[in-house]
Length: 547
Image: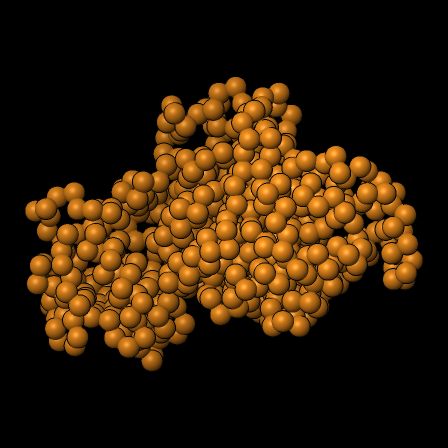
C-alpha cells in the first residue's frame, strides 16, 4: 500500500504490523492544527462510519490519530508515523499537517474518498511505517478557466477538494474573457447582467460549423467567491483571481461599450463573443478605462484577501494576446501614445499593465500576468506566468522576476492525450500522461540564483471545448496527478524518471478517483460516452517544440 502514494513522498520506512482503527479510536488535534482536525474528522466520519471522538489530550487518541506541529520540520513538510501507539501526523505548519493527513487518507484505501461508508463491516487499518515528506516547489497550481464555459460554484469546491488530495496549493481562477464575465461587481452591474451570458456557443474548434444555440453563462456572486476563498483557505490553498486586460475583454465591452475603441468600431453593437480564438476587440487605452478597472479591482481585493492562503497577495491581470490593430487605427490611442511619449502600441500596452502593477503594489498586492507583460519591462515585484514556452520564464528569471512555469507545449491540459481517432475534440499536441510526468518546470541554463526565481508550476485547463464537469475531468485527469508529482516530489531528471513505477501506483490511484467520482480518461482510451465523434478539433502533429 505505501508504494501507491501519489505524489511520491521523499522517504518511506516500512515497519511490521498495522494500526487498526475502531469505534474507540479518537482524533486529537494539537494547538495550531484544529482546522485540519475538523476537516479530517469530517471526511473520516463520513467515509468510515466510525465516531472519531474528539480527544482532549494526546493520550486519549493513543489508538487513533494525533495531529501536532513540529519545530524541526519546514513549511508544508510533514512526518507521519504509524505504530503500536496509533498514528501521529506532525507538520512544520498547519499546511504540512494537512498534507500528512491527505497521505493518511491514501494509506487507508480508496473507499475513504467516498462520502458515506459502503461496507459497515469494513476493517480500517494503516500499515506501520514512517513517512518523511516535503514539497519541491512552493507554487503547485491548477488554472481553471471558468470564463469560456462556466463552472458552477459546487464544481469549483469539488476541484479544491481534488487539488488538496493531490497536495496542490494554488487555484488560478480565470474569471473573465471575451466569452463571459464571471464575477459580480456591484458598482458595475451590467458586467454580469449582460456580460455573463452569451446567446450561443461554438461546438468544437472555431472552424467547426456546429453551434449550440442555447444561451450559456452564469457568474459567482460576491458571497460565492468569499465561500470559495474560505473553503480553499481551510485546505491551505490560495486562490489567485484573473481579470484579463487589455485583450480578451469583449464581454466587458458588450456590457459597457465605452470601454472599447468606439472611434474604430461600433462597440454598442458588440455582444458577448460566441466563438473561440484571438479577438480583435480590445479595451481602449484611456484614463477612463483605467478608472473603470480600478473600480473592479477594488471590489476584487476585498473578495480575495491577501492573507487568505498561499500566494493570495497575487492578482493575475492577463496581458496576453492583445491584438493592437484597433489601437493603430484609433485616433484616441494615437493621441495617448503621443501624450505619454511612447514609441508605439506595444509600449502603450506596457503603460497599461504598468499602471496596474503600481496600483496593486500601492495596496500591498502583487501583479502576475502572462509572459507578454515582459514587453516594455516590469516593476520589481511583478511575476510572470510563462505560457508560450520556457523562454518567457527564462527572460523573467534573469531579469529578477518570480516565475510560474506553465508552458503550453507541456502542461496545457486542453491538449489531446492521444493521437487515436477516438480522442474527443483533439486540440494541440499529444500530451500523454508520461509526457506530463517527464515535464521539468526549471529550464536548463539558469544559475542557482535564477532557479530560485521559479516559484513552481501549474497545469492550465482552458475550457473552450469542455462544456461540462465530465469534459473537464476527462482532460484534467489523470494528467493532473502526474503534474502534482512533478510539482511536489524530488524526482530524477526527466529521462531518468520511473514512469513504469508511477503507472503501477496509478493503478491504486484510479480506484481513489473512482471513489471520488472523477470522470478521468482511462489508460486504455476514452469510454464510448466520452468520445465526441464528428466535432472538429485542431490537432497538431509531431512533438511540441522546446521554446
